[in-house]
Length: 514
Image (cartoon, one colour):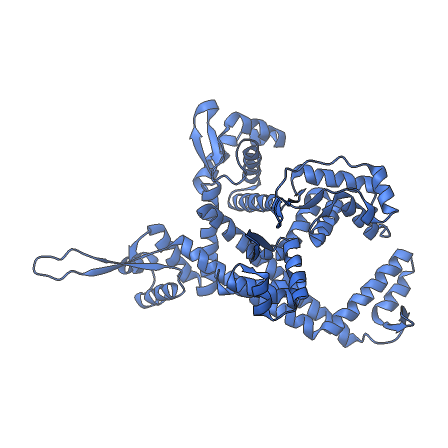
């Protein structure tokens, strides 16, 4: 694990769990697996704080433990920690596919890490019961929960087997529950601690990642060809889930007749051009390939090869952004030729010799390309001459770009944290204004009163209760400064999500390279 990854992990833990959990996480990242006594000694924290930090990490599946006789070693899971910045994408995926009810259920489950179905539904219902815009009802939430469990977006959490002194978490098969609406309504009126439901649920990240992988591939084909080609690839991916493993490198062959039947449901015009689209996708992207002639032809999706193509495109984009278009031209030339001499690079790149050499050495310095020295056979009476062949090691370049993403992600999160600290007072004041305005809208107050409160307010604590006084405290310059800070934070948040998309492509690529 790289140093850049450790810095990102530290930033994420600090943002979501605070300095104490960050300190324990840094210690585990640095030393690998350690027992609790060694963690207490190396961090210098009280035993209770270390226990609470480890409990938090284990609860959110950010760490794991392994029993060795009577000693328990704890180990950090950096890949799971990186998923914390992907939460907005999970929520957007749920809202797009299943609506706002699914988004609220998944958001609550992500915040609680794991809970029972009854507690989850009742908690969401109690949280939004006064929001008239949501218009929630318990039946709709129950149906949405069953739909998410059936589709695999949520799954049953592992159960503990305590055959020995140290319990072991054992995965269990997910069984879609049969929830009773009357019991859910009774649970809303009673204490949730008395609920008899003892089956815990958690978010299935792997199911979301399958959607993200398919979305990246479909968008790539759509951008390269057209929307019909993207729909055809989407149909082939749906057929893949029926006959082969979801993460298989190549899908099982799909007969052409099945594809035509599926395309007929999309459009009649699409059915008449299936073979032409399949040929174009195979020749232009190589995401699919013809594997047989039975049934008019059989085609399979090449998942591993598709990810290699996506990583190559990501490498080209990174080189272009970092060193310019001419360097990207040299990089693509070397990758296409496999092995090439320096003189041939200058001939084929159509660049001046001096500039071509300079860019080639920059690519070598940034570890985007590698050089392989070779020695020619010596001629009669002459000395052997050494030649140098340039080539691209895609696996090594992908590691380099992943470290760049970690470094950029750390910088973005550091700037975001610094911006929040500098503008903490203004942002907190604006947040309280929005809370007051939201409450006034729920009460149905006139718009004129809401507009007045937007700019003139102050919060005082009188006798332990919050009281609103109308005072001129949010001045026009403060409004401008807070708007600028929010705009900057939104830009940084968008940058985090963009970097996370690149990391997802690279992580998926490395999954198939193991």
